[in-house]
Length: 130
Image 1 (tube, rainbow, N blue to C red):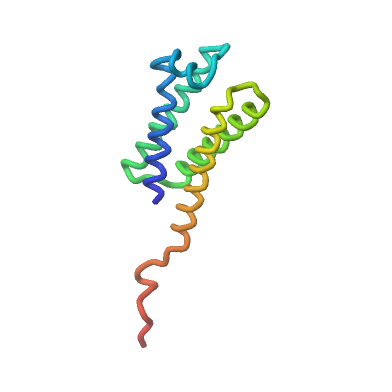
Image 2 (image 1 turned 90 degrees about the horizontal axis):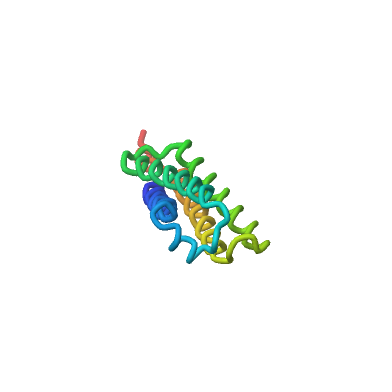
């Protein structure tokens, strides 16, 4: 399940990170006007890189603690920013949808981690014989 969550988050971040880099006009049409385009592009580059790292980890099946921390930490940070500033009217309410999406990603990570921890190895399921 971790692999699927990593692919989903990586793809989402890649798409949303690249968007303002390719078309600031359409990005602002959906997310609202921005004062500092350079800052939007900076965040876009960083979110794109996070997405690429997550996708690379999923494709190489190297989803360890650092990748989990990157994924959950990024989602938590973006969710906080989305809710904090959208609820204060600094950014458009559409960011609340992104915040909800980030919380869903966090929940999926928690479920995936929990499922991995409670799995009983096949050898441990074998009946004991003396």
